[in-house]
Image (cartoon, rainbow, N blue to C red):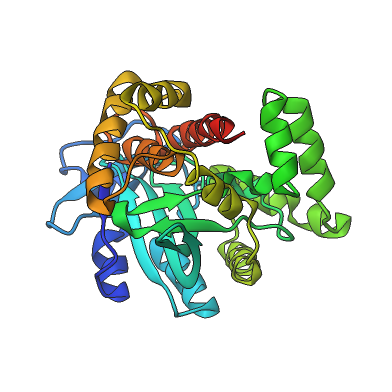
Length: 328
């Protein structure tokens, strides 16, 4: 995956890094001697790259609704203008967008910025989602508070925010991460209005596969999610970060053990160890669980791998929980 920094003007970023993408009739892109056979996939999703080249990311049917980046930008700008941007994207048209806000969290000597993560793909293979979770499951009463770590351009998911408290999260880890327990916790925090759910079910279901999506309704829904995110300040995950930084990994054997437990593929595990050693030098500190988790996160989102963006987020969740077990 490629990573872009945040030191670009926002307009330049949106226009050049999140390159323009639009729908074209496939027939119009072919030389005149070619004629298409009947098919329901005759709309090309074309990306106009900063270097002048054009990529056809996918062929879609007339039911497909493209969510353009300028629409996302207009929604973000309608809610707040006090933000920076960073993104990761793949040559196949997947991307992860970080909306970095001024609110901060102190972890040891580091300062993390509050961060909203938006994922999407131009192929339709990775659905539009926020903070690594399908928008269908997003509870507007409880939008996770994620963070951005500047030293390695990491967008850190608030994985522990599924829980009501730090104690409940560590109890879940101590019990072996049971799915039934996690489901019970989720039910406990879903304090949403039933009428609103019924009203939005169809919109959100359509959002997952980009079929027949009403973009005006989608914009309204996305704006509400961003507003609710801006209002959130407390985060169980932030407390976990400060627990992780207190647990040292004094030996190479300890580091290797924790990295192995994180469950990364072999090549990414090696990259994580390299990144850990680099951060020890940059920060002039010894290894601890906080640095180990960030090294794993860095490897997952920067290492060469066949993993999709969604698969990288799932692997990051597993790594976070498995590493946090060492803080029990």
